[in-house]
Image 1 (cartoon, helix red, strand yellow):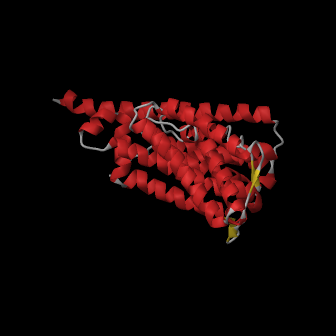
Image 2 (image 1 turned 30 degrees about the vertical axis):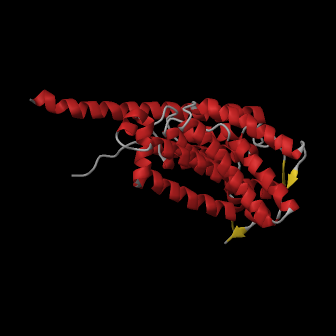
Image 3 (image 1 turned 45 degrees about the vertical axis):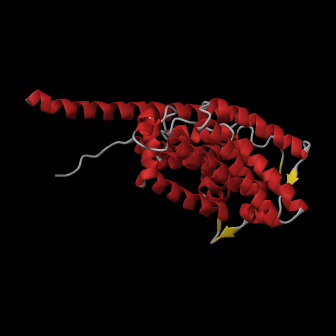
Length: 325
């Protein structure tokens, strides 16, 4: 017996992306060039896309991290200053350590002190912003050899950061879908108390994913600093909102317990296409913001429609045997 075709939310997202891509390509044929797609459209979304991967894990647990942009900038600045005063190795180590410590602080306050994720990361967002401004005295910090390599090098004609994103996307997809750790994240998002009573160390898991998010922010800091050659303390101001938009667009519920990595990846492609496509069409920035908001609303409506239909079908299947008895 043939399996019935299922119109999933991820398929709806793919349709939205295909329509957007085709529409922009018709209006601006230059958009289809290999160079533009790889070196502009994809390259400009890599930092957001990378951080969206661990953010998906966090939001699935019912949490959130509003400090990712300032974590990235603080790591880049401290690493750049360490490289300037000592060596590239010092810069790399300080960058990674900064990301890990920032994530650890968030994780411990949320998991151990039981402070809400939104309140904790809102506070740490301003803390990291203030620290970045304080250590730099408001001046820019410049890239060094390793960060330049991460931000500008290519392999087989494709920027190194795109290869890194693909590798990370595969790893996070497997982690969430194929491992017991991933299943525990969903369980925490659906019912953290029941999950804890079932013997799962929820506090440890929460700390791990926030530290992991901080480490990815540090990795992105290398790319960001190398790509732009310098960074100022306020460079990550709107970064967190862009990351969260990608994750929510991909169908991950802000209430926790629902979502997958494939949706986040497709959401990243949609935002990349919108950002680059509307720019190549010379659409004013204010109109671009309106269009992006409209696409997000359409995606959320699609999510509601598809999931309501799926829920009704499950109810019918459950009730059918009772009706026959």
